[in-house]
Every structure is written in structure tokens, then in C-alpha cells.
Length: 234
Image (tube, rainbow, N blue to C red; front, side, top):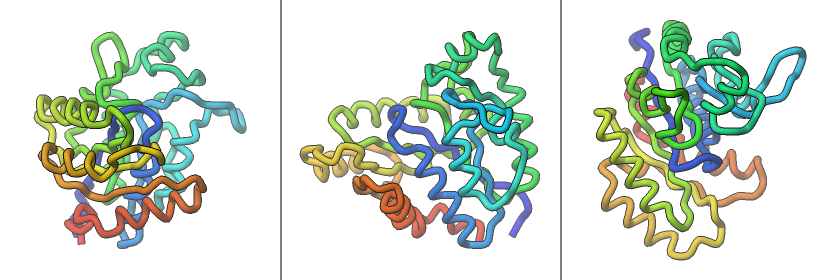
């Protein structure tokens, strides 16, 4: 196997629809096949101080799912206390989010790991600064994109608009995950089939609604362990 790192960029149709769970699932799937893996969340908004540093729950989840120990500043170059839009959180903190800084951190991780799984923040077009957004970050890193679709009313438009934005930026759309975030969603199967017909990327897995964290983790792992995306490195 080549030491050249591979990676994925995990984005979503909205915030709070399972990007972290899916990113962690991919990390565990690659690790189970013997690869060195590390997660990265370049920008995180919403953190609390622990042992003298700001820590974000998504970053800590990614850290636990990987099998490499690296500095948090590389996994998460920008972390803000307030759980608000990242460009606003950065303004409140007097910080400017620099793409070059994120790219440098990514290169350091990629030099050490077989696989780097990068999780975006919010949806695909969330602003990071006056001129930069998450889509621009994905393009800068040049990684294939995984789209987590939060299956609920309105998801069809959100998913199709996100897919159009991915294509517009010339990025590889590697696949999508159907995450049933609304247990009472009507016509769930019909919505999945509608997206299968319209999205120009394969459905990699479906995650059923689970209220317990252990059950959710098992559901994510079942959905991702067999995906073809974890096979090319072998």
C-alpha cells in the first residue's frame, strides 16, 4: 500500500444531521482494515474549556474514532466558544479563519496517516469569512465529497442543491448517506428512491433512527463497513 494519504470530505445538507457520526464511522471502517486514520474538523463552533483549552465535542469524537494521536491544533485549527455560524464566532473572537493555515494542518496530517477524514461545519456553503466558505475549503483540500442527507421533510431540495454546488466547484461527489433524523418522516422510502434517481453519486448506506448512542454507533458502522470506499487502499 502506498504511503500517499487518501481522504474524504464529509459535508451535509444542514447542521446537526450526522456528519460527525458518519465521519467517525468511516474512521472506524478504515481502521478496522488496518489503516492509520485520523479525523479533522478544521473549524468548530461551540466549545467549553477543559484542562485549560477549548474543546469541541465533534473534535473529541473524531479523536476517539481515529487510531493516531496527533495535536488537537492540527485536527482542529480553529475552535470557538459560541455555537453560532463560524464566521460570526470568528468575528466575536477577533480571529480571521485562514485557508492557508487549514491547508498546512491538513498536509501535516496527510503526511502521517493513510487516510484523513475531514468533517465540514454546518452545510456545504456555510461562510467561514468575508470571502471563504466550506465549499471553498473542500475545493482547496481537493478531497472527494461525501454528503450526509438528513432525511426529513425538505431534504430533497437541500440534497439536490448541495449536489449542484459540489458539481459547480468541480469536486468529486463520491457518494451520499441517508440518515433518518426524523423518526416520523412520511414516505421515507419514496424520498430515498427519488434521490437515488437524481443524485449523480451512489447511495453508500442508510442510517435508521436510533435514540440510544450505542445503538446509533452500531447502525452507522453497519452502514459504512461494507462501502466500496474503504476498499481501494487494500
